[in-house]
Length: 229
Image (cartoon, rainbow, N blue to C red; front, side, top):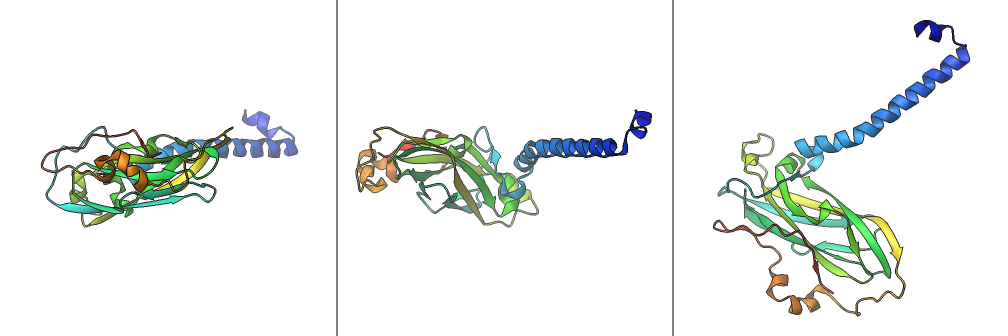
């Protein structure tokens, strides 16, 4: 192989080396994306949260405040906000929070949410049991929904030298456009329809959108979103 390469025409040798380098770098770049995603999920690097199959094994007396933030990508026309800006819960306690999304356009729009936790050192200790961000969300023209996230802060946070002094955690979501579709004869929601006007039909369920576990009670890991119109 080496003799073949040495006897190769100089110009052809340069082309061969260049193509080889390009293929190698392309392969490394392709492999780096899933590896980086796996690394962030395992370590919490960059504020990436963890995913849990169920509630924490224990609940501490120490409390922590969780703030909720929402934004949209520049090309995403949805209105997107947290129903509640902040909640305080015990470390290890399961909390439930809703985000509201509204599609004010005459198009069917599918979106996906990226997320992170700040401060970054707390990312690996913020565990989601269920979340709207686990799958793409599609809103019809004029549709308004509330989408749940069920989570807890892992008690191991208090043993982490980099995170044990954290008293506030901010959970941020950004919605990005995946697909926009024209809908023939799309019927928009009546003008003036808001979460508040629909809350009368939803009753207490719409008011109690920030359920947290108290005295051993754990809220269900709700994964289905709630349509408001």
